[in-house]
Length: 345
Image (tube, rainbow, N blue to C red; front, top):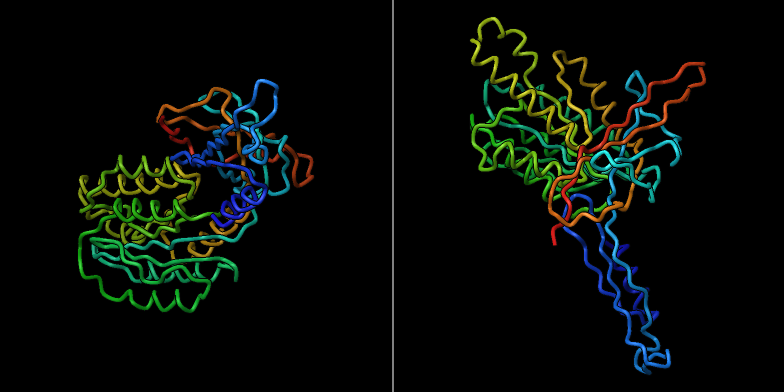
């Protein structure tokens, strides 16, 4: 937002009249309209408008981040614009904006804190603390816990000690009910007004018992956001021991919970993890951190302007190549948000 304010001030100093409108939606499309002055019959400008001459631009730019991995799931850096093909609704588009994104992270660590099926302290504090440790000095992070409602334990800070202090408040849950959908919906909405590279590190069972928002609501919200979700399933170890005792209905419930976490992550271009052993957590937050720091920002202006308010599918193909120079193609894959809602006029 500071960059936009500086741009407007610069335009004002040049005596340009600018009216900038930001199209609503996940694409952050910018429709910039600068009015043309009236021109006299002889081709000259009115005296009052000589210093107000401006171009007229009306552009809808679709911007989104892409993570490229090899066959082992390792993030790949160093690719160029020509290595990517972007498709909207299966129609190839011309990539107009391209850059590796190396900006600091803005992350919300969102943790479930409800006694849904037996609370497991190590499923929350250990992974959250590990992810906090992986943050760099210029990263911003906030800690939010949810049961029947989300609560900010630590607001955005670069100070890891403040985040660790917030974790210390997670002792004994007060409720058995949890509102996952409301917590994710609220978090994504709040992050939508934040600039930069954004992510949610979600620690959850994937169960929801109380939300006002539906599963469909939160899925739509994931399709309107430019925030990636990295979801880590809680309670997998407990389920490993209880599977024989749980009936078919309970097993189906937990399978649905896993699918919820997987869907939330995939829709935003993130990842979902289902650890069953404590030793797996370190690899998870290291993977999430590495993927978030090795992204490419791609942008295009749709060949056919979309102002229909509908969902449009995105697909990215990346040119396979021998990145590690071992004589074999690395089977490169692109991971990104699956679509965006166009602005409606």
